[in-house]
Image (tube, rainbow, N blue to C red; front, side, top):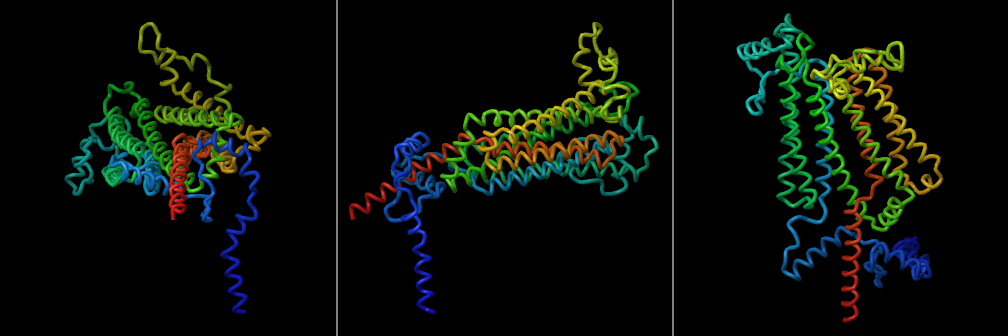
Length: 486
């Protein structure tokens, strides 16, 4: 039994080498077509098979770092302050920040739906971090709110306890925004100072940090529009400007998208560098002209989903979801009357020259119709792209399985979002459905971004793979020369 165990151990250790020696097609490896393909993709930098039986799949990330260290030590010249690739911890931090932004977007929708956004009438980024601590402080805050148009026109009989409930909603939303900012700025400074990110990623992180600060300013600018009588029509329901609300929502979407995309990019680079041969064939496939239509369609779909979500911001700002609560018709027809869609009531000039652009942005009937059209277009586009991937023989054969699964995810999310939108409209915008509908828009955009990360092969990743092969080839050549000299 002991000799059998020893024999099994010897065979297990020899199996990898026997597999390489017996099952490698030398003719194919030496064929001119194979060499021509390798040279076209990587130049003359493909490493040859090592004579000492080393694995043919090198760790490209380590090779890049080794080559950078060798060049610095040999030449005495600094090649750069930042590393070539960002650390994986940066990717996980960016994805965690994106999840936090996703949560605050949903909670911001709840704050608007409960009409709590105008309960705090001042913007104090530092001193406003703590809520009122005693009865005197609560009376002072309630007195400020009683002077606002919302209290006078909408809540004249509100009690102090009722005010506390909406106050805490808005206060939580603002505190969450501060947490998002601090949890991004402090780790960003650490990662940049410790050189955990590449130079390009450091610039992107600084840009996202600036976008977060701008988002905080937009939030107060939006709230301010609901605290003045001259910013909305006299006698109308007090609300924030739909323009500022949409700008605030759009900036939040951009912040989230930037965090999600860059986090996925870092993980994707590490995945490509860990298996360069697989990355080679993935690059050939995804950059093929036969998938050009699919690649561009995914990009156009991301823009379409974003525009549909922004039109939803206009609907929310104008409370346009509270009218025409039927589907698919609007009233007695498929669309409201033309005189209602392009009404002179919304014109601010004597010659009525601004009717054509003010109605799509300020007329609730036309704003809801535009949102219906964009939502229907988005759903149709997603289903059309899915049909293209499912029934086109070339695309179905060439598209990687990860892209197919990503496409199925987009189909699922767009179906869920359409169902949420229709039910929200039919049931007169109830709080749970309306909040889920807003979260669904960001989830749908996320699924499209994830599909894009699997579809578009970035130039930076391709460049890193080529550099890794060159670094590995140089190291292998040095090792061979060293063995020959000995």
